[in-house]
Length: 256
Image 1 (tube, rainbow, N blue to C red):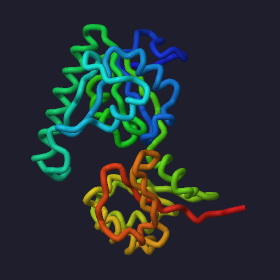
Image 2: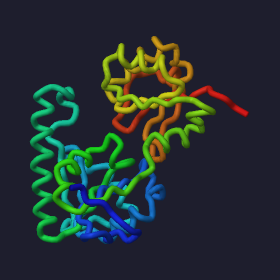
Image 3: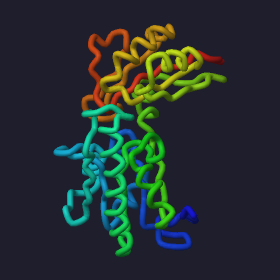
């Protein structure tokens, strides 16, 4: 059984909701929804992911509306990030164990009746780490996902780039795909968003060139945040990209 929210009250339904995946939007605090703010204010615990030794971006976003409070906070530090490739046992094994341990840690809090808000960049169900907790916990505890403005929505808004016109078909691609697969899918779509850049940017650039799309491609870094960068990919002179970066390929469909 999956617990689902009913009604408009953040804790309504057949049982009090204990687990919230709270979408915070693309980074600008004023792009958080009213619902997200209300749940963050009510929650007994604020749960946030981070890289070991660093403060997580999601928690930093929430600084705008709530001060740090060690008594309320649960930090989930990833054991590995870019030290190994996805699919490598050196990555998949530690990460799977991390999610199992994190889920049990949160379960103990909810068994004590505490309401948890897991802070999520963008939308919790769009390439989000929260999904791995939800899969382990939502059948055990009443849960709700609070939608958030996605990073790509913030990116094309800041770039001033309408992404789909008329009947354009848009494809969202992770940059972790093999280069040939990226090129094939790019050649077969009208518009695209490529996420998970980082060290994959050189491969993504080659795939865009192979698909004849580099000239249309826009590079957006830290959309809506401080130190935002928007540029034509062809004008970007290096292949460095942080985690919060993506490539947009706007469609060229029917315009009236």
